[in-house]
Image 1 (cartoon, rainbow, N blue to C red):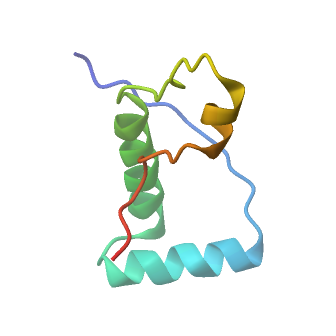
Image 2: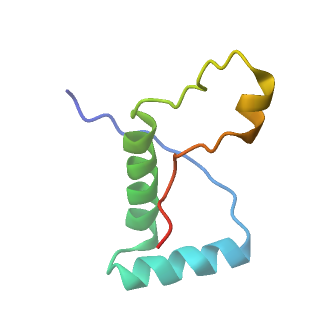
Length: 74
C-alpha cells in the first residue's frame, strides 16, 4: 500500500482548538499529529461491524426489551 498525502482543511472554533491543544499536550503530540491520530482511530473504528437491529415480530416486545450494547456500566 502506497502512502498517499492528502491535504485537508478543517474549520474549528477557538474552544475546539483549545481542547485539541490540551489533548495534544497531554499525549505529547503536536496539534497536527493529534488531529491525524483522531482521524486515524476513527477510520479504524468505522471498519468494525455495524450493529444491526434484531428482527422482532411483536412490536411491544421490541419496545420494552433491553438492548445490551455499548459500554458496560461501572
